[in-house]
Image (cartoon, rainbow, N blue to C red; front, side, top):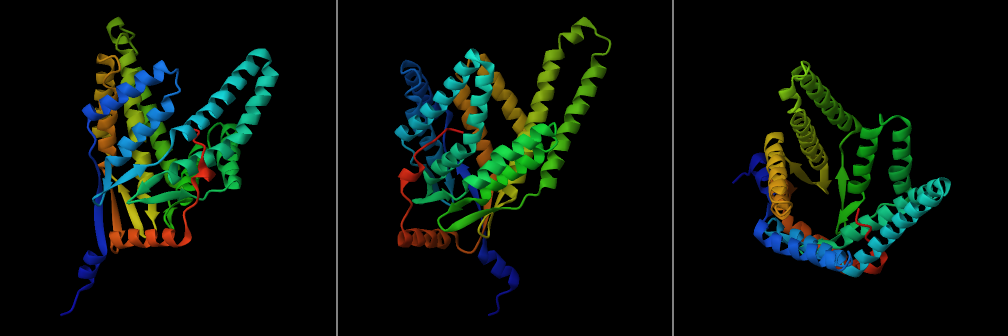
Length: 340
């Protein structure tokens, strides 16, 4: 019996959608306890709160029947937050005492920030796992200084004309230096594609501004009263488009080996979730926040998928065998989380 090429493709390719099983009522209990204990302990408990939050979201995210997990320790997170808070406090105090000293310290902080970002990325990925196998990050400090210091500086000097270029380089640095087991991620989005989205956003903002100006050109009092709502609507439309277009571009351009990710977020559903979440949070004085978070997380994850080439379970098993043979890196190498 002959097997056609199409049949081979069907056997070799499988598509798995991401699932999210968390609920607003479950997360509300975690969120309210985290909030109250963080207030009572003057923020110290926030490190433990982050671990509980991350574990909840990771363990409720599923792919191909298995959940992710988070292994970060509160002490390491607290250490990173003490570093971040200390830098901020020193910078603020120096700025109050002497503007020149404040500027010098700001420059110093900027020069060490890429180093801290690399440690934070390593911490986050090393402490993330799927089917018991941890992720990793191999980006170098030299690359980080170019991506997180040089390019942003050039972006400012060019009046943000290089912003799409810098954004593309940052995502490329993050994705191409990430790995799962022995397999690296790949990122093939071009600078041109980032510029296209930024120009589309600019076009939307200009069009909405012109439309708003036309609507209110007569300066009628009842129309002027609607001006804040018009600006809010314009802001929601522009940010919703950005929040949809960029993740779609980024994830549709990301592969793990020869397994490709897909994202199919849409503007109108995202806009509705954003608007209704904002309304719910306002009407409940913030108590709707955990429910809003769950709604948005579910929408984002359930509109992501992965197309695998070959047997996914066999691929994961191969990664686990490699790690077992070579030994995992020690957690002590990645013990600072700057919470970026």
